[in-house]
Amino acid sequence: MEIKLQFKEATKYRTNYCGTLSAEDVGSRVTVSGWVAKRREHGEHLAFVDLRDYTGIIQCVVDGSVDVRSEYVLSVTGTLSKRPEGTVNDKISTGEVELTDCEVEIISNSDTPPVPLDEYSYSEESARLKYRYIDIRNPRMQRNLRLRSAMNASLRQSMIEQGFVEVETPLLWTPTPEGAREFVVPSRRQVGSFYALPQSPQIAKQLLMVGGVDRYFQIARCLRDEDLRADRQFEFTQLDIEASFVDEIDVMGFISKALKKTVSDLLGIEDIDIEKITWLESMRSYGVDKPDLRYDLKIHDISEYFKDTEVNALKAESVQAIVVKGGAEFSRKRLDDLVKRAIELGAKGLLWLKVVPDGESISFDSPISKFLKEKDILGFKESLNLSASDLVLVISGQWRASVEVLGAIRSELGKELYLNSEAKGNNRELKFVWVTEFPLFDGLDDSGNPISAHHPFTMPHSQDLDLLETEPLKVRSSAYDLVCNGWELGSGSIRIHSREIQEKVFKSLGLSIQEAQEKFGFLLDAFKYGAPPHGGFAIGLDRLVALIAGEDSIREVIAFPKTQSGADLMTGAPGEISGLLMRELGIKFSKELHGGQRVKSEKEAFS
Image 1 (cartoon, rainbow, N blue to C red):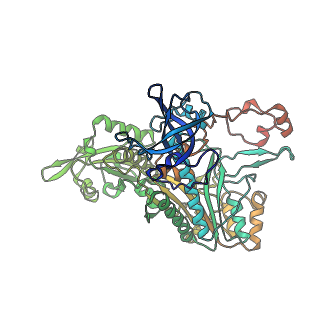
Image 2 (image 1 turned 90 degrees about the horizontal axis):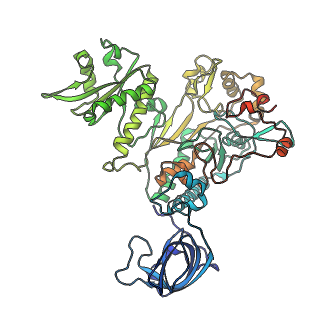
Image 3 (image 1 turned 90 degrees about the vertical axis):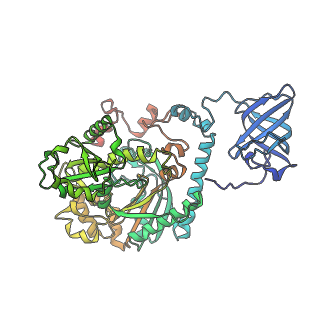
């Protein structure tokens, strides 16, 4: 992918950037500045210095010896010349030219770097993060950070073109129930009181809609105290939007338009296709609510074909299967490993059936082959469109548990068989899909109250409002997620703008009117003064740029990320603060609570 570079006027240290020089500039006297990528001596009277900045490398030919080493910072003035015949380097953009008659100014010296700066020979991640200021010089990191900048600019431009106004919301906020632990900041002026760092600008942007802003957006910094992984950091950035007088089709349209512009601007791919499926369809076909659609490996419900089966392992509420094309070649050990994996994921077991030729038909090679009756298998043979060399993997049990285990196995097999194979060539394909109609609630808490699947400000589906008080777990929501390649890029919903409906949802969650007023009175009171129907969305920009850049971890597109344990190896954070500051903030550390354990009350943590 090519990022368009915008260059400013010449400065004291440069007239040009290293990687922008070409044959068109031959004969010009130019000045470039940067870091020494490589130095080669040719006898006592000639030296070659490869000088690097973020745009690329230019070879500088220096008469006489020059006392420089890798990563010295130089400013070089010379005449741009064509390289002699036979010395052209077609691996770099400036391979046809070089600087001659060079005057070299050493700006600063450098020790030997503790991490390599060749984008194809990365060192251990811990070393890269400890010396991140050096690692950032790597061409791969430079490309990723500038790609991120270009993506943000494209998204911002699209939102402005669609009539959105950028508004900044507070970082010091009040706790909100969004499902993740919050970082808190003690107040020095109100000892014993705390601000919460925002998990998202959710309530603030809803209040902006009450305030008549109409269409809001922000490239927002958010924080969640969650366990870290490849696609999650404590700090993250999102394109956050909210709009009034809209439905979910409108909101998905805003985001789709911005996304299509960005993919076009950055990758040159015009008019990407974004599919749309419901949450229930996604679970039935893929076993997850964030499906990877780069490979066609669907789950099939074959329960009806085993209603009267005599095979005990198939006597269950639900019988689900996936068909692996060519999987009949799997070894017995490989199949045993799949069975073991299914059990690790929570299934009671996994049945496998190899499809083998049988005259002009097919039959099964399986540990349960002799127990299968023709009436059991006739229907699902046809419905699965099986052919010789296929492998059928079957899990029976409770429906959701069965599809979730098969979904996890599908994902693992998909990565191995379809994405990590060079012959397939679809590893970096971008497959977007909208997932809609999520459940409003996701199970019950210890007190028997429903748990919000999204957040408690999500509007219930209009057709399910009557179920709120009688069958809350059957209520669908007006929520929607954007998924790409198995990563959840973002989520959004139409919000509740009616105080009456909001109080009903709070009641379903086990909150009394008094408790709801204490926690969210400022929002509920705002609804008394004319709240428009509104909805919004937020895209995780760290994940989006990682997908566009072809990276497997968002740490590769963040300038200063944390490790998986949450540490900053470069600065040593998190660290202790002085006893004086703790006393000033009214904080006393309790050793009994050390280790990140969840506490029951603020009195236990700060006593």
